[in-house]
Length: 125
Image (cartoon, rainbow, N blue to C red):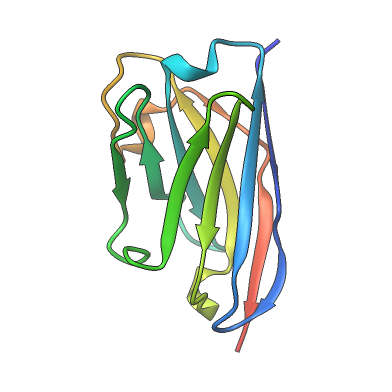
């Protein structure tokens, strides 16, 4: 059974940091692109970052570039999202997701096929 389990969310003050984890099981983890997405209340789910398999190509949304860092540990079947210099507008539920088709990383939400339940991140001002 495929599973993605996010953790590491919480409440933090503006300027603080959090590290999210996405633990995967039930598939060959190192063969797939994994993405991080977020959804704030009343807004559409948006791409935050993604990382490809093999060469670990990464992409970031403009809004988080330079503040967030995505990484993968294939030995632990886990993707991380290090979030620094957090802002109140980063408040959202953060989800990780798998892109089953192909190995090219993409920030297109529709290319992702399986989603975790999410972890809440709240940044206070």
